[in-house]
Length: 127
Picture 1 (spheres, helix red, strand yellow):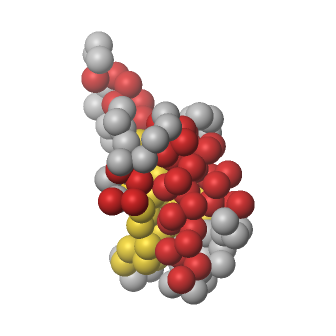
Picture 2 (spheres, rainbow, N blue to C red):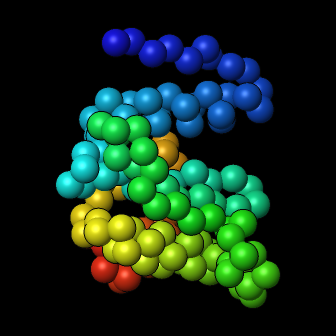
C-alpha cells in the first residue's frame, strides 16, 4: 500500500518531511498485544506518549505534559519529557505491559525524544 506526501515548499517542507519519515518507520513496526507500540508525538510546547495495541486499535496507556501532575512542574522541556516517560512507563506496567516497540514518530532520536525513552527504560519498560 503506497502512501504519498506532497512535496511542500518553504516552512511546510519540515512537516512534510516529518510525515514521510513517520510513514517509512510505520511500514516496519507495528504493535501487538504482547509488545505494543510506544509512539511519541512532539510539538514545540509539549510531548505526548501513547502505548498502542495496533491489532485491536486501542490505546493501553498514555501520558502527556498536559497531565495535572506534570503541567505545573519545574524544569525545561527535556525534564518534562523525562517525567512523561516515567509516567507512561508506570501506567503501562499497571496495565500489564513489560516490553514495547519504540516509535519515534519521524523525529530524530535526540533531545526530548531520547530523554523520554531513557526515562521509560529506567522505569522498567523494555525496548
